Length: 239
Image 1 (cartoon, rainbow, N blue to C red):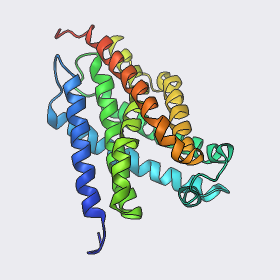
Image 2 (cartoon, one colour; image 1 turned 135 degrees about the vertical axis):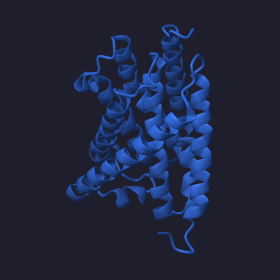
Image 3 (cartoon, helix red, strand yellow; image 1 turned 180 degrees about the vertical axis):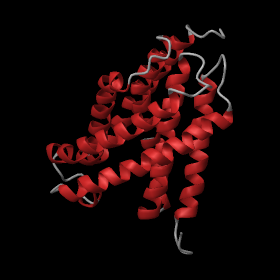
């Protein structure tokens, strides 16, 4: 699958190690009844692979229709107007988030390991982490291993944060006697799309300034995620 001279094995190792770090961080936050590692890995790998596959198809189709191409944006060095980039990235963010949400919804609603409210958001984040893992592999294959390292710092937490947003619905649905209704999660999913689209667009349009602002945005997102996890812990039957 890979050429002998390819940089991907290095990127692959970095991606796996980085994803493992984030997975351990996530599991540590599930403090009362931590999910079995095999269950988390199953959701991460199956959910990540499936959502990445369908999102790649969707993004490829959207790229073929758009006047502005992803390859042009990646090579632009920040000289493309934000409004132009939004037209490309907002639909792309919708494609990625709806693929992640749909796969997570199908995996979580009948998962026997989901036995406390916080599990909905934990497994949602696991799907987001899996998506970023496979996306990083694709990026490393296309652009070389160096692209993996900033993505582990910025892109991986973003996918976890956006998954946490619509994962809140899955946690609340569990609290309502597992009354999972697919379209009921769409308001939060759309909120995740907006954050995701603005993030990707700003990373291009703002150039280097983006990397000064991005850590503060991520800190806010991760703190809000952590606060919601703590709130769900209050309703745990294992407390």
